Image (cartoon, rainbow, N blue to C red):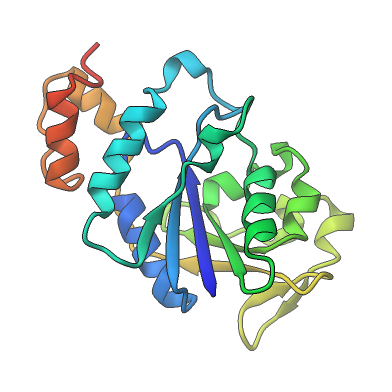
Length: 215
């Protein structure tokens, strides 16, 4: 099995998330994309995030009908902050014999990876797939990671990957640029502006049915 974990707050989920997952699945020849909403992200104040229940329901509506997309509530089942290293450990321990895991992140998130909990360990536990897009500088690993860690990853030009010492690799791959952000959607709802065609219609209807982002 070749699975991609696509994490985030998804507040709300939109076509940028969905298209990114779809393209990475094809680029990396994955069998499944698993959307993993963060329950209590360490980099954000909990009071600023919509309840997990609402974000979960919007994800389920967004991926309905796509049998290659699935959802996991694993981060809501754990107490305390939501750390990616613990999520990866969960999937590897549960499917250790059959799973080749790709942790999918946006380029902006990866460039801040040294602020994550146990990030050095995380890089050695699974493959990383970094979604790049126009407007962001394509940085080399030694511009993102400390020199001693970056030096452990050897660039293979023939397949355009950085191979790590534990057999896992870091992939930088271009995906279609959709200039959509969850924060902008929240601002538009609050300003009573149309958000049609930024997300699946079922998600848009859910937002208004439950009066989300209006205050």
